[in-house]
Image (cartoon, rainbow, N blue to C red; front, top):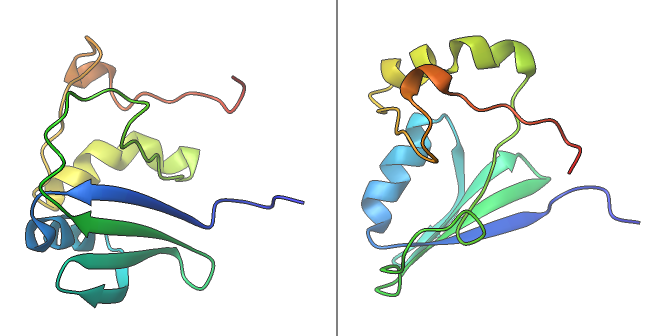
Length: 109
């Protein structure tokens, strides 16, 4: 019955900055108003909603506000260069260095 992800939503503290970031990832805006923006992940199929709110200051944990975007495995080798070319800095987390990223996990929990 379930065929895929229809939508995911994230709280953001600054919608304008968040829109700039996701546009750098070549995502297209599907809808926008003063406090909300939807970006197509797959046009006509799935999207990411960004909601501006002042309720974003909580400690980070991957089970909260986590979205992983699917890319072809072949593109992972050039992902850091692609992000850097768009002015997006690679962040390190989970005690992984920049050289150990991107972290690729199979779909087998």
